[in-house]
Length: 365
Ligand code: NDP
Ligand code: ZN
Image 1 (cartoon, rainbow, N blue to C red):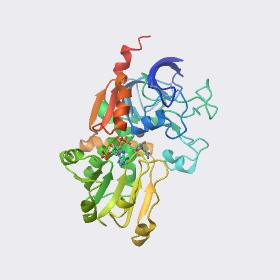
Image 2: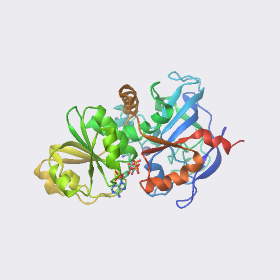
Image 3: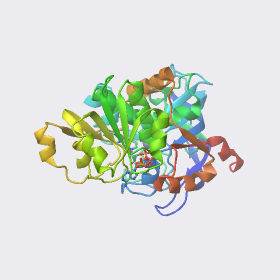
């Protein structure tokens, strides 16, 4: 076993704090990684606070992980010690269902779906269960830790052109927005609307622009209109009825990253005939969709969940090629509770990334 340290929370209402724990050593086709940086996704906040009613405690979030390989199992072929690698939201999947076989591991239909990097049951035979959770298995601990063990198939290559701290958010925020834009075939010259200009929205706007689209971000925050200008995209306040009216039936694709239940109808009205609004932010029931608007112009409202391993590698390479990445603020692990509060208050520009070197000052053992 490996001695490991990380930040976890024991209740929905308590703060994250240092937890000493053990990880299984790398199996034959697994890597042991020293975590360098970990992005803070709004999903981490939802999960730590049990907002999806499925959290197993202790909960150690972190699924935007970049680290350096320190050990490889004897069967590893794709990576070597010293490589900088990424780990996103998944660390395994059933591998035999139709979606897995088609390379859509993120839509795995196996008995436990894909294995989440944190708050997931450990289904690997190589990892003997010690503590039981609701699935009768161990709970996975994510990237707010000094070391991670991952199957080489679920590790991503970080291109040299990307700094590790900049690459980290691409592993969730990047692929979650890239994958639907690829699926719904965003193309040069199209008009793309990004709703909610936070961690996902910031990367989505840059990716859509790099795809050649004409991008508009929709925001509730006046000051972010300047941020949009800085990125070279249009910005519209969501309560600006006049601006919304002028944009009716004009968008080829829209992506909502709003992190809670919201009214999608004002945005559906902005779609062109036959076009799609994809909701990735709210993983919960939405306000009722006005099917009159949908039916009259044969529009679609869709959802999308993270992205496949192939899409994750693709978006990392895409960002490296186009010289884009998220706007980040580096924090120490000791600042993570304050960061959660600021994320909930919308007070982040645009993604916190934890420098995991900060953990060493507390975990000398
Ligand atoms: P952030 O908090 O960084 O950004 C969300 C933005 O949405 C805010 O900055 C704010 O932007 C806007 N917003 C917040 N609350 C409201 C509200 N009540 N009404 C309207 N707009 C609001 O979150 P992330 O970008 O990290 O994540 C967004 C959501 O996506 C989360 O719920 C997360 O769990 C989910 N997610 C889903 C994934 C999937 O696979 N489907 C994967 C990853 C994340 P502004 O100031 O511009 O209004
Ligand atoms: Zn995430």
